[in-house]
Length: 415
Image 1 (cartoon, rainbow, N blue to C red):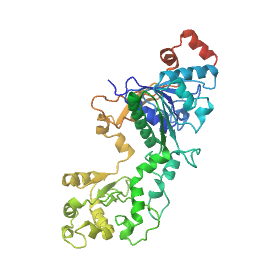
Image 2 (cartoon, helix red, strand yellow; image 1 turned 180 degrees about the vertical axis):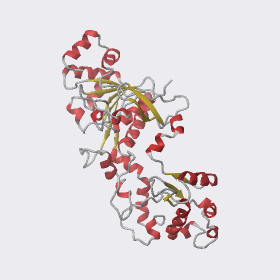
Image 3 (spheres, rainbow, N blue to C red; image 1 turned 135 degrees about the vertical axis):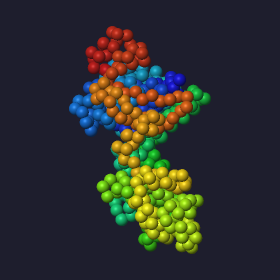
Image 4 (cartoon, rainbow, N blue to C red; image 1 turned 135 degrees about the horizontal axis):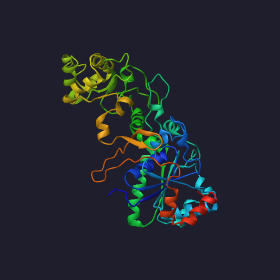
């Protein structure tokens, strides 16, 4: 039995943040009904296409395990069908611009009247405040949430990350909020609103930088490279390059082949507990007892020299050899893996983290699978739906229409 079997989701989402949320719920077994505009559908169906007239990878990789119904919610018959869907579903998820559903005549108050048990979940760019009406995309969220200002090197501009922490990260937050509200409804019998703001989500993931902002008021951040380089700190948490965000200094170092391979690098952490092993590995055994290097506090002003010596060693090894040598000694390291390497890694296929899916129009393609594994409720990744593929099925099974009513709805352009 799937963990969320029996839960029905009315999916009014598009692009990335909302579909990430509903796809995760679908992977766990919820019946996700994706509502799309007739003839158009989710905008990402046509974005960044690699095959003409075929749903893009952008869409297919965000909408697995769902059913698609096309519905014109501006039409009176469409509104009737939409009302019926609200009555029959447990959760509505949307990431429209603020006030969009209100203008359609389906405010939170109206939804509660239709179905008091409905959970109404929303992704917004900002929470309540001066920017609540602003439109937000991934990189805007990273910038407004503190991610960009703390990413990059001190002498360079702010940078965004390739990880979709604003969109997909917020979608994961919303999914947790929905499941929590469903659990609460079992006791209260009532639905409630769930809101996940993209700015809030990014800031939540930047908690260690907020920690450092407060520490900075009491003195320099000694684990940052600029401390050892004698560069003065400003008033805000600075960009720290590839320094570790924790208490154990770490950096990205070159490995054998770095001259031609842009990913021939490893992340190396000089954890205090294994410092003596590090000294032996890199050929600096004298540092174990040297008063300038023996303790973490003594090493902090000299991290540049420490990592230069470690890099001289890593440049003689491949990133995989560094891992093979260091891991048995409990030295924390990790190779910089490219998307190509990850897509070809057998172990990720075996665990369902990377999945090959067969699509009727585009053929086989790779996608990410469920990152959360349940022992008794394994997640099966099924292909994304074609536009309106399940319209008649949903009208019959969920809305309760007979054949004549389905034909009538199609005739007036409601579906």
